[in-house]
Image (cartoon, rainbow, N blue to C red; front, side, top):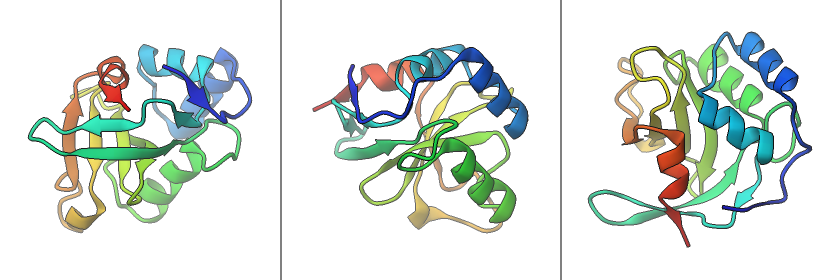
Amino acid sequence: MIFLQTSPQLTLTDIAKIETELSIFFPPEFTSHYLQYNGGYPERDVYAWAGGGTTTINTFSSLKYRGFSSVEDTNKDLILLENYLPTGIVPFATDDGGNFFCISARLVDFGCIYYCNNDHYNIYNHEECLLLLERSFKTFIENLSR
């Protein structure tokens, strides 16, 4: 998998500082990916839904640097300011419609990848807009196609 127009390369220290700032730990495969590709556009950018249909990933957010968007800023906006997503669900990419792809940093579903469909947002149930896509970041990346 190749990513285009990525932000500057990260170090483990950079990622550790972001984890501390967000009070989370990223799954190791997510950290490894971001050490190699910090945000950007995936060369294979189509995710196929299990029930049919596809969605195109617009961009992966960067860490530390304010490229297209940053994971930290999106996390602060959607969790701390707007109370939109449950704590521990970290948005890392968007589709062409502005919906989010998120990774879980929660103990109960650590590393799972969710699709946050903004059309299904429920102010009383923050989990309702989340659709489980994959059990790991690695599987999510492997299942992207063109």
